Image (cartoon, rainbow, N blue to C red; front, side):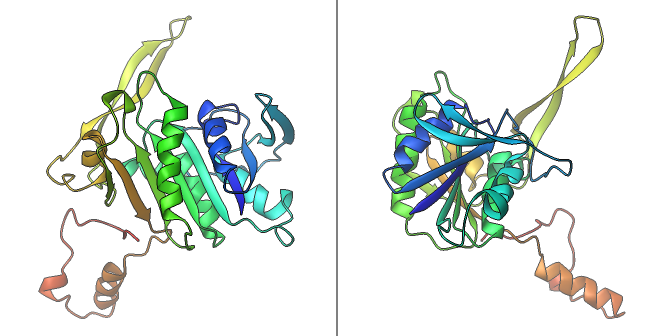
Length: 271
């Protein structure tokens, strides 16, 4: 098996090295990751020229360091750096992210975006994240992640598999739950601060879910209760029901009451 490993915490992140060692038991692992932390980059790509160099990571392996986003890394790997005709990539793995990627935050996550880029290219893809903890034992986290990955393999191309590991300081995970990601979002806020020169700053922070009742059967709830969560995330953003409704309206025909657009309807689909 040829595995492409990336992340959004940068090529020197301990979570990437820990996962590299476990994935190496499955086959050849190629590391192509951002040169620095790119958390929250989402699925952005860089349109100006980017640089790429080989670096040795902690004396364990050599990888490609890319001055770009996680999406850049996978795109560059598949279309330029790797001879995919001779040695195709069988699996893309992104992580381990330093912090969970749950709910609507999957749209902001560079970790998830890198896996989505793999899925765009019809490659089975997995994103791995871990809840912020003290300490962050990446060796133990990667052990838990690999147990799940081994169970899932062989994996077909299609939806991205989003895995989140709970806080291990609270003990061994209670189990595994396959659940949709939450859609109600979080109560978000900004923390006030100042630069040394006195200029005001604003630091993004999130809080508890906006609607715990809506999120009761989702990744947000079960990770907080100590379960490993798995969510299959569709790579398309089509809402077929709403497309039908809009087509009826544009044609001047009434929208059936049972399919009328309601405020707060959830968007998208879970694969």
